[in-house]
Length: 76
Image 1 (cartoon, rainbow, N blue to C red):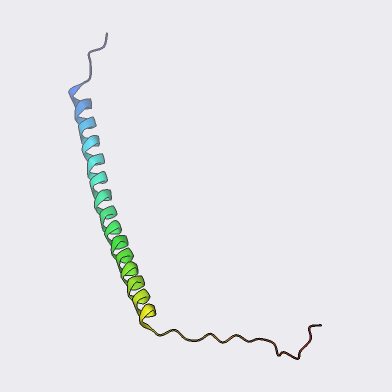
Image 2: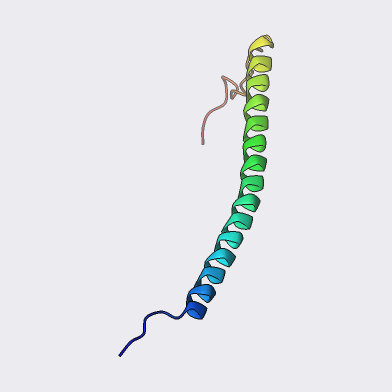
């Protein structure tokens, strides 16, 4: 006949659960730091693109020069 879970066994499960929660908390903390760094990098990239687009729009357009073959040349 089974006596049910022993108090010692329940205490061991409670410690294991606490240990897992502590590990998950530490992992979440490390992951938050990584996500903040990624967010800062993306914001910097976004600001750089915005600045470069405005800079490109403010520069006067340059006439394009195309290297065209001479009119007297015949293709071979």
